[in-house]
Image (cartoon, rainbow, N blue to C red):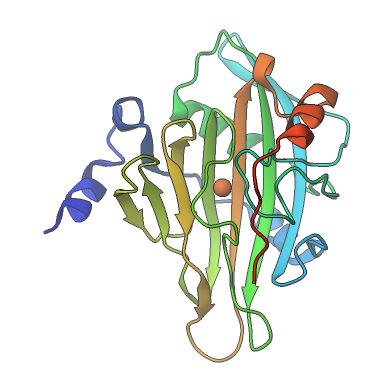
Length: 250
Ligand SMILES: [Fe+2]
């Protein structure tokens, strides 16, 4: 058994996230109704070189008397800082997103509880619902920007469905040594919790397991304390002003 395999066996232990800054956890299965909403996602027109469908809703969340309460924030364009996402189509670019057609409250509650965040804080959450498809025309490129951090306090990737795909292995990487800390192909209803300030992450491409078409449905949930929110005019200005050299994909 190699070191990575050994690490895999302990990642779901309670306290692993607090100690190591990442953990693999089980998520409650989604309802059929929520799963069906992956079938009606609009195409991501900012990423035409691949077949990706996406929605995004952004929330304010806080905890009171043991209960998480969420409020949908007004729809805005989505921007990730070019300081973190060094890809011309994504970093520092305002991207249009349609909002979710389902209520992700159970998902957000499960994630915040698994992270063990401070319930005295208020939070801002981005809930991205994504399908990446691999077929004869499009390679199943999961992460075109390569290994990266998202620029948030926490990033959580939840696999909702793997339909006839191989690949899509999630990797946790040390940003200084570039050592691979953990690698795992997440199963349906498994999530990886990431301390996004501590590690960079990546996922390998997917390809159809058999025949011509396969897809992988995921949630990417990005979380920040409200006072460090990735939402609103100040965040948009800071993210736009980021000025590191960017990479244009071949
Ligand atoms: Fe990411």
